[in-house]
Amino acid sequence: MSVVAGAIALALGGCGSKHDDSTIVIGVVTAQTGVLASYDQPSLAGFRMSIDEINARGGLGGKHPVKLLVRDTRSDTATTAAAAQELVDEGAKIMITPCDADPSIVAGQVTQPAGVPTLTFCGSSPILPGAVGDMMFTTYPTDNLQAAALAKHAYETGLRKVYLLVSPDTTYTSGLPEYFGKVFTNLGGTVVGKGSFSMNQPDFSVAVTTIRNLKEQPDLIMTAAYEPDFPAFVRQLRAAGVTTPVFGADALGTPTIAGLGELANGVVFTSAGCATPGSKLEAFNQQFNKVTGHLPSSAYEVNGYEIGLLLDAAVKSATSMSGPAIRDALDNLENFEAVTGTITYRGTQRIPVRSVALLRYEGGKAQCLQSVTPAASEIPAPL
Image (cartoon, rainbow, N blue to C red; front, side, top):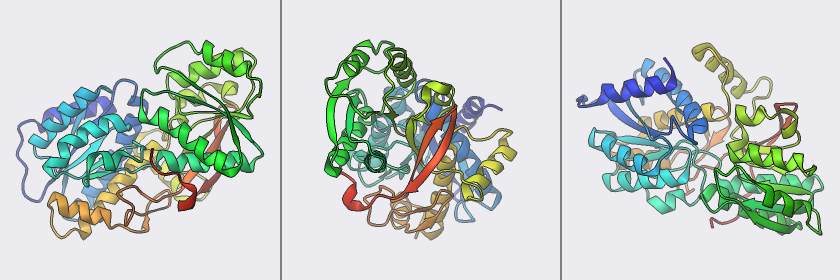
């Protein structure tokens, strides 16, 4: 059964059903179609695998079987809000939201007053928990954390001048380059220019021409553009003869970007982890392949899987199965041993402290560079 087909089947199976007291219903509002599907589909696949394993052990905390109710948001914000309300009405006690801050915020506006703990698959904006309230958690390395790791790497490898390419259309595409610029200039680098683009547009000729004609040429270009914008930008940039290295973030860790081949050579991006030989992540990838018949397409599978582990640990230590009790237990997790490393929520305002991996594309393959955990003093405050 495909991921989308499975989502539809689960959604239909959950309608109008009743749940016994020991069962924990988890609602999943996730983009299985549309522009966010490249991120939400693998996240859901990893989460399903985790929940299947947890149910085989008796459920969350060893005694609470999980029932998943899944809705496809079609990458639409209004649909996300409606689906979240529908799942709360159907008894969801925990909610999982898409890999983007904007739809996660509207879902959180439904779950916060209902007292339902809510975790975004890989929405990485550091403003997300504060924008919603004490029921909302991020799970992935946040934008400012990723930017700090990227900027430090750029500076340490001798790059000193950056051009920032942003889009005001999402918090991810607008905020992450700005965070990078703050860290980079604090280290001693210079922002030599900044341009903007509108998402889902095929023409980057103005941005490319501006970069090519800069009086002071940058050592690198930093953008948080993702599919389909990033491939279009890189193709047009290289076609114009601009060979400047490009840095991006976690949204570049997809088969589509890898499929650019030589055009993506030298592109540096971030991830939740790196599958080095003998690592837990390498073992996870092998197990995922065994279960699903294919290797993970990105790090989003393992992040979805780790969300299940976090919920299992939280339910095990919670004083009750109420939403606030599960929230408190999750909020107090410290140095939790996950697949990609340790994860801490205690004292973090529901934003995990965790490492971020840096990778670089060469010949259509992502090569691990290093995994780092920037110091708190190096991470810029949320915008």
